[in-house]
Picture: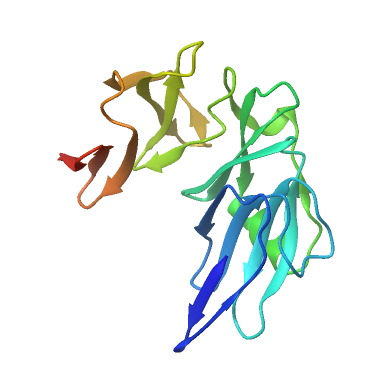
Amino acid sequence: MLLTAAGTSGAIGANGNFDATWLTDQIVLVNGLMIEGATDSGQALYSVDLLGAPVARQIVTGIGSSSGSVAIAGDSVLVGGLDGSFVGHVYVVSRGAIEAAAAGGAAVVVGSGDEVLVGGNPLPSAFDVVGDLLVTSRYDAGFALEALEAYPITAGPTIGTPSDLTTGSTFTAAYAAAADGILLRFAEGLLLVE
């Protein structure tokens, strides 16, 4: 993981890193196998506090044997992981619990009571939060992209029944855009949908 601040740059080892997002202006969350400087390792969510010398901590465990995505959804953090059978899981952890663990408190251990979504083989541990939607890719048995699915996120948060945002393999990802728009990625660039 490359870091830049105040005109200088550096690197922190992040083996097995799958995804990262900012918790605050100075703390980044990394879903992966390890972060250089953390006292614990293994598949987990890590925080890296970049104020001064970087401080890395393992803050969420129990997400599975392979990493997935991480995203902020209101007052919650959604954390994805794959279990040993390559079934995707998405867990919800309160932002307060994440902040406490990042500040040096005990790591949060997630389990089935924290799951908001259990997917097929091998996704939806990989997702993006776009507005009030959790967007995943749906693949067929041969691992060909069939659609981008959108799950509504409601208070709690809870994850609702999915609907197809796109079908076929033309669009491969969705990103948040200004004013509640969605950017759909395809081979030639991005399409803005409002």
